[in-house]
Length: 272
Image (cartoon, rainbow, N blue to C red; front, side, top):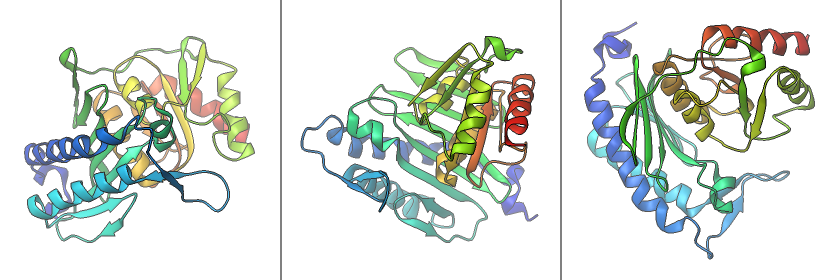
């Protein structure tokens, strides 16, 4: 592995400074569209519903413009405009509005996702909720949220038993019928199941409010920022087999290794 790819050689201070510029720019672009009665959306899918709005596209363009000035050597992977190559070994992974369904519905559960990753996975992650004014940031072993209460350090919960756990996912069906069945098998063991929070569920996990987020059908730009944030707060994020999750697909985020293993055992047993 070259120095450029090794986290020890990365200037996290400059990454954080740049990420905050990106988030500020995205906030400025997005907020005029939120809860605007004239907002139009397009469906990306021939079957099903995956909306995109001008707010998504404009926010990603604004962030890409800053990166082209501030860090032109880095690669970019964005939901709306795809991949741009780089030479540094670092990739900025951008989802300008994670939770566009919530965005067009007026719920403040969507967020701007900004991550920086090496080939091994994310090393910095931000979940920014412009309307509430909360910004969750995680890197290395430090995670913080800034918002109405100032800046607060984040730490995941120590829940050890599924019977005490709170679990989230975005869609009730989760993914395929098989994946949905596996998720519901975990739900049979927990105290409370909630739906529809998009990236904000991962922020709540990092903040110590909930214990598990289980999802399927994810893209890399959906999960890179949550991985960095949750793990910096003391949690763990893997795929449903316990391996790396940054390629997307199935992901389980947990507050600690004990609750992660218990939920993983149920998923595996259900999938066979």
